[in-house]
Image (spheres, rainbow, N blue to C red):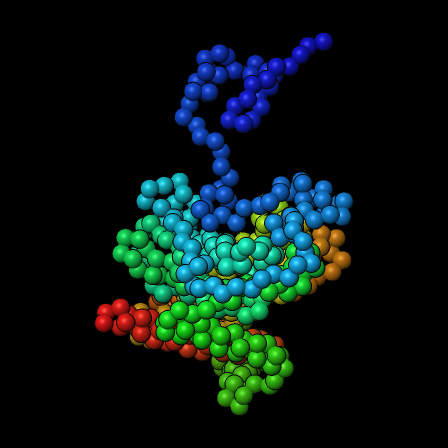
Length: 452
């Protein structure tokens, strides 16, 4: 009978059986080498979503035993005592994080894409994680269950021509009874220039009953904050009205929209008619031919802090990158991200489920003036099924807009269903333009007050 000795190396146990594979010199060199403790890539970001309460094995065991796997501080206290609602200011929830790419090349390595530019999808994860931190800060001292209800807008205000240190910062800009809007901006530290803005809506739920949880009130402190609050309140009200109206799923297209679809239908029929003498132009792609698909198993490494559901920022990254591939394949060009339109998370994505993603070019618009090119709007529909595929539910749609320089490509819907998709894309494009105009006016007003 033999005994097995062991030693501990950077937190990992190395048995004698493994040590016998090395001679004394190699073991000494291995131990004295300047190797740092391995850090999972997903945890390298300062805004990492992996701030978990318990390990997955602990959460899984708790789930199997029928008890909660992620215990919040609120649920440890009396759940029958109603929360005391207090007034909060925008500065109370203000939070900023730094991404020191110039000082940390290995951190930068996890944020660059294959062309050496910033990987926007990776930034999306940080935006959602930071928004969650801000939301919990606003709700303090209570710790309800907070989930991402929607991404109202993410807009790239200008392209980054060089990689530099970045700071993400934001705060709560509007509150309802149990919901809040959070605005986050990204700036380059070197020139203090904001290049990206994002708006999220979070909702608070009771950690045990899952009913609406009342949150602290937001009280604007000056004229600028009042304008920001009023804009968010108007947008939230308009969003609710649009949800009730059902859009094109409940009401027919307008006369102008019907004319657009009819004109496209006549073009498509002419291309199909062998006697028309017209062939489908090389710069026109049928909508059905622009589709790309992806299927993936949801692993626990990308769960949120409540253990059993997938982190919303991870879904943003996956849908963004599939949309990018779709736009690139459609144009045979290099798409530049412009914006993510309003996105509602219709149902959560559980750990262990199968996520299906379908991306399709929904709308295109050409730009004749410099820089010439095509705006390509890609819609990514997501659905989720349990591993046994007993059911499959819609989990949300994501609409991304890209610009591809020196490309003139048009999408052509064929069926009525595709025509509705096209019109929805057209409406999104108009709404995005109005949003940019309002944002420019607000920024201009802030700039004038700063100068004067």
